[in-house]
Amino acid sequence: MLSPERIDDLFSRIRRFSSADEVEAIIAGGRSALTRFANNTIHQNVAEEGYVTSIRVAMGGKTARATTNRLDDDSLRRAVQSAEQMARVQEPDPELLPVPSPQEVNAVPAVDRHFDATARLTPEDRAAAVEQIVGIARKHKQTTAGIYSSSEQVEALLNSRGLSRIHRQTSSEVSITMLADDSSGWQKANSPNVVNLDAKRLAEIAAEKAAKSAHPTEVQPGKWTVVLEPAAVLDLLGFMFFDFGGTALLELRSFLNNRVGTQIFGKNISIHDDVYHPLQSGAAFDGEGVPRERVTLVDKGVVRNLVYSRSTARRMQQAEIAAQVGQVRPTGHGFPLPNELGDAPMNIVVEGGNGSAQSIDQMIASTDRGILITRLWYIREVDPYEKILTGMTRDGTFLIEDGKLAGGVRNFRFNQSLIDLLQNVAALGVPVRASGEESFDMVVPAMKVNGFNFTELTKF
Image: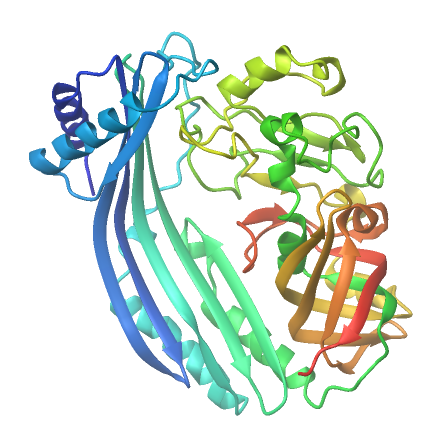
């Protein structure tokens, strides 16, 4: 891993090679390892260590960025020269701000997301966990496939006005699919601290789902009450959060245009962007080194605030809609410049039911007839303003009858508006750190939702 001293030395060399008015560097990378298994055996184990240095220069209102994955002087010099050559042929950007100095931005609150137990994981440790997973598959006469990965990473941002940010983090992840003759089950989890991962327990849940969903029956599509496990909630909700950036609203590509300050979700829905939440991960600064703030996006169904980069906040303050969009200030949610996205919340926390939080078992018990959904896949956006999504269920879809699981059912395709979904949440669970396949990790609860729209059966 690169030490702070090595990072400082790299940036000193970059500055020495540049003649630009301003220089900024993002240095990121580390060690990562992956154990992959299928057909009840490990078939791949890989590990690598590498670093990428992304250099941005600014001169005369123009900016450009170049990247290298080598740290020697010649490679850094070529990257600096490439950035400067590209900057010279750009049109001046009247909205480009100087890189921030330490005096202009607050200090970053400390977040400790580096865990020695994760950093020390060996191939033998991952193989031992896979052995447990395979043992559970064989006990149930199933076949398993998936991954067990771990990493130790550093992310640093430095600029020529003296700003320096460094974040170190570990990560561990397990993804398990269990396959039976005509059914399957799935579980996935990710955490900076490997102690929070219980591969054996995840395998048992996936195997149980595959066993209990065997010989699936067909039920008719239509509007159903559904119980969404956290992974399914995450993969649906992930499609709306890039719309909470100020840039998206200014460019009229957000479903929140003309809706900020209005009640568009149920009163039981509150959502925050909170990098400091104990179940979150990632650096507490954005792509310019600005500290990330905790921002309430939705309060009891009302969209209250957006998130902003430095330049987007200034643009919004000068816009006609400034008085309609809540507090406008840099919130530390910008991406590295230059970029097309502007800003977005990336540390989503959806509040649960608080004192009335229900477990998934309780949600099932209170449902006369419905569908339990483990996960969703192949989700695509159909209508960006009404946030209508289409996709399919998979790896554990069950019929609920009289408050009990009544066996597996054939999977469905759905067409569902996220706005309607969040207006019809009948119950919420306790928020957990959830992982899916269609979106970034979030802290979300399970949800019981009325009127979920299934349009047809799939072929499996």
